Every structure is written in structure tokens, then in C-alpha cells.
Image 1 (cartoon, helix red, strand yellow):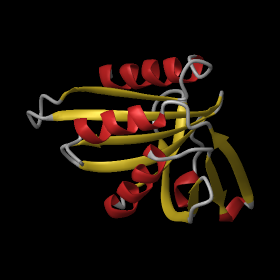
Image 2 (cartoon, helix red, strand yellow):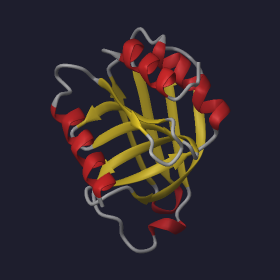
Image 3 (tube, one colour):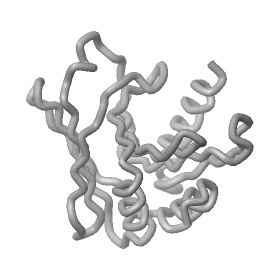
Length: 164
């Protein structure tokens, strides 16, 4: 319950402070592993956030959308697309779930591809484009995140997660 509250607070702060910095890292000691766990948050708009999480269980990327989970959504096929500047499009098969009381998420755990993407976000010069498709509903959404603060915060995240 405390973790959900902290995540909600961090996401709320990230979205509300988007005018100051588009990317924010929150790192803290992980009592379970003795290492650190961290969250890199990239604000897209008031309803969407790109989040990278690491802990003793692995590395994850999620597109968060403000809203409530509805029955049957777990059966859908989610496709998460990310493109940095004029680079290649990363195309992930994602799994949908409820993140917390405020957000649903489409998540992926392909560590190799997520690390490549994080390197591109760290070096980004113009923008990060994000798209999500839910095939069964014919739904598509896309948005753009600024790269303001992406270098500093991606480095903080990668260092906290011991991924560099």
C-alpha cells in the first residue's frame, strides 16, 4: 500500500512539474535486495507517462495512462511503439494491467531492447515519440515527450540500477 502511494506521488509530481523538467529519476534503497530500485519518469501529457522501473526482479518499461482498469482488458493485445529523434521504431508486445489507483499500464520486460532504448533517450536531441495500439478495440494513441533532462536523468537511472 505504501509503494502504491509513493508511485502515485512520484507520478503526480512528475506530471505536475512537467514544465520544469520532462524527465525525473527517483532512486532509493531496496530493502529486499540490499541494492537500489529506481524509477525514470518521462512526462508526455497530463494523462500519459513513460516509466522505466528497475529493482531486484529486473528492468521494465511501461506506458501509464490515467484511468481505471476494466474487466476484459487483460485479454487485449497491446503494442507499444517508441521512437527517439529520427532513429528506429522500437515495437514491443506489451501486457496491460492496473498500475495503481490512478493509472493503467502497458508494460514490457525485454531488458536488451529497453537498454538500447534508454541509451537513445539519454542521447536524444529532439523528441521521444510514443504510440500504443490495442488491436481488439481498434484503439490507437500517440504522444511526444520532450527530451529536457533526459541525459541527466537517464544517467542517474542507469547508475542507480547498475546498468552502465
